[in-house]
Length: 124
Image 1 (cartoon, helix red, strand yellow):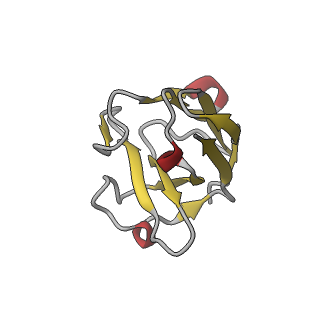
Image 2 (tube, rainbow, N blue to C red; image 1 turned 90 degrees about the horizontal axis):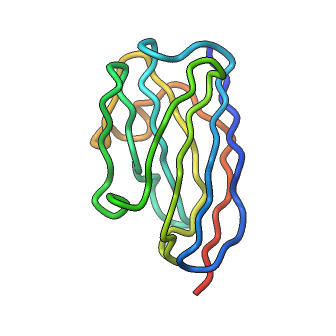
Image 3 (cartoon, rainbow, N blue to C red; image 1 turned 30 degrees about the vertical axis):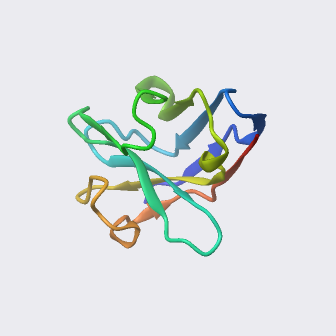
């Protein structure tokens, strides 16, 4: 089973940028759907961006034009570049992988593999 480790979270002011990384223990391209989720206390995890096995991506409306997902297959790493951050982006960010389930409409419990999360805090 694939293991995922996120990093790159931190505290920034509104308008700032962060880049999150999700390192997988094995090659993921065309093998797993990779998705970034985020969660705030008391709320369900919401999908932020899904990276399909084909390479296609879908973004949540709330992050379109500000967040960009990319993948370095040589490093088994998925990145989430977050620009123009807003206080409402504050959350724990997780990467998830599944060989079959994919997309932002797929509930979080549909994903088989998860990282431990990395905290992003945006102050106004």
